[in-house]
Length: 107
Image (cartoon, rainbow, N blue to C red; front, side):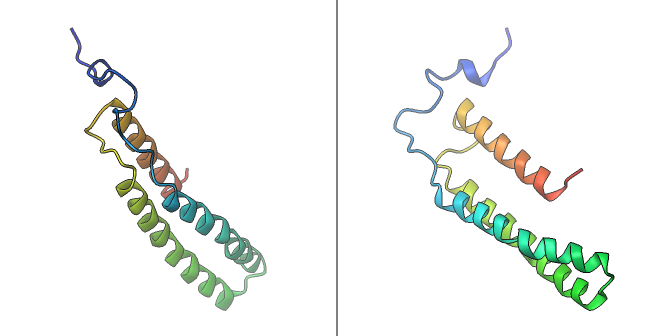
């Protein structure tokens, strides 16, 4: 008989587990939205082949990437559940990590 995490718990979330802290998720989305302006500006500078502006834009966008990953790490630390606690924890962590990998390495 296969052993599954979903069969090991009585409910989807552990009793008494507080909801995740949304502050880091909000910070992540705000930085992501704010990075859209320099990203669009960089694309326009690339179309007209303005090399100095492209270099500055690439430097800025390169700095934004690790900032976003750092915020995501803080967000994972404040989910109030660990991946090994329950099926809920492993599912939430899996989705968060997959979204981080997809954002960092778009196809």
